[in-house]
Amino acid sequence: MGRIVEQTLLDVLFVLSGFALLMGGGEGLVQGATRISENLSVSPLVVGFTVVAVGTSLPELAVALAAISANTPDIAVGGVLGSNVANVMLVLGAAAVLGANSDTEIGVKRDALAVVAATLFMAIFVYFGKVPFLAGIVMLACLIGYYYYTYSVAISGEDVYEFEDSWLPNKMSLAIPACALGGAMIWFGAELLVTGSTNIAETFGVSEAVIGLTMVALGTSLPELAVTLVAGFRGQGGVAVGNVLGSNVMNIMGIIGIASIVGNGIPVDVEFQRDILVVMATSGFIVWMLISEKEFTKNIGTMMILTYLVYISYLSGILDGLI
Figure 1: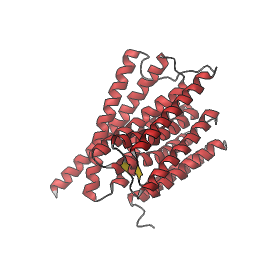
Figure 2: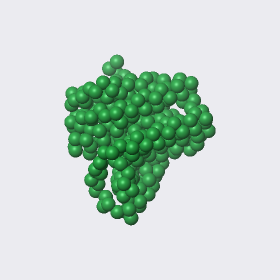
Figure 3: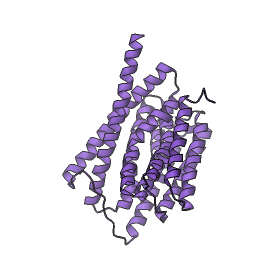
């Protein structure tokens, strides 16, 4: 009994350390990438939809690849689905509560439709019970095409852009090491997180799917939350929404795509049929809000956060005694 308690405490330490490394690594990588983009005179619109979105999605990628290596694909799939729900309901909800209302420009609407397409891709794989190797290649090709199109549209405009402030000095000699160190922290943090969460799941008989949908998903959404909170405090709703939409597209098309290639196809547990419906409902709600140009009020943000907390409570079994 004592050995079990000792191992559990160690696993919890692994999980907490993994969370900390993921958040710190994501921050360093994003700040470094932003400074590199500024030095190369790349539009911040492109940075928001691509560099920042990819940077904040690296924790999900690291966790997914670590999970595939550990032969626990449910954590990889659950982490992506749960992260997309967290991004939409928790992260955007927090932005709305902070008053970060987004201007529904064409770029934001375009990325909203990209989220719909990516979610439909994932829904098909969930109901077929597998993401094939070939599907991963197709998803990556579509993602690259999407980024190329976004970049082409961005550089064709004549608008003058201003780069956001960063705590990192504007020097390439610091930006590149910041990216490298951030990436290393992300990978190491992912290893700790997967190891700790898998052991906890085995110890308490909790399914890997639920662990992926809750603890892992929330932990890997911390970079998006950090970026969005900063945008919220500055009143930059477009940055917040753009980061989340880009991250959700990257999570499905990029991360699941890469994971299926590395794993030569990955199985999808039937349990995720419930959760893809949640992803479709929450993403659909946000897309409807953006396309119909509805305002993200503080009340709506509060409702989104409370809905997410209820969902997490349900997955964790907290509501079992109440229902």
